[in-house]
Length: 157
Image 1 (spheres, rainbow, N blue to C red):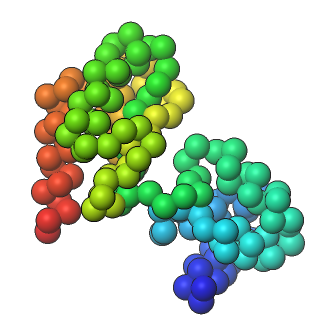
Image 2: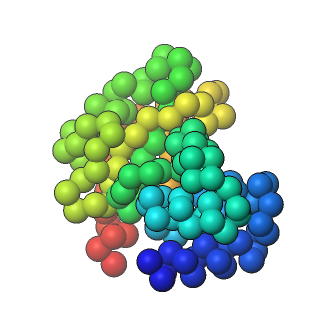
């Protein structure tokens, strides 16, 4: 609890206490903890003098503000028609096989979470996936496997 309070106070000091500071504060928490706990939502509401329902509504509206625990590496595959037409289903199938999870799940070792997301702005280079903040485009199953292997190697170090 104290760790959450400290993180939120630091973020509020950085972004201010206005309603406009809500998104950057929530983003800071997710960047640090990978998701927003109910306690985080309550503390942010208290700090910004907002209702917890208002903060929760904002947190659950946006795809990138997770309110459930996620893996260290969150993989988001674009699900738009452009990526569909360029092979996103094959990429999702490849990811499900090599990670041994389905979309919406997290690996047992908590290293990867597999999700889909709306347009990432790379329609001309689909299929596209985002791992944390890194964009990967023009994917093939082989390229996807190589990328995941690189992340697995990094986690060993």
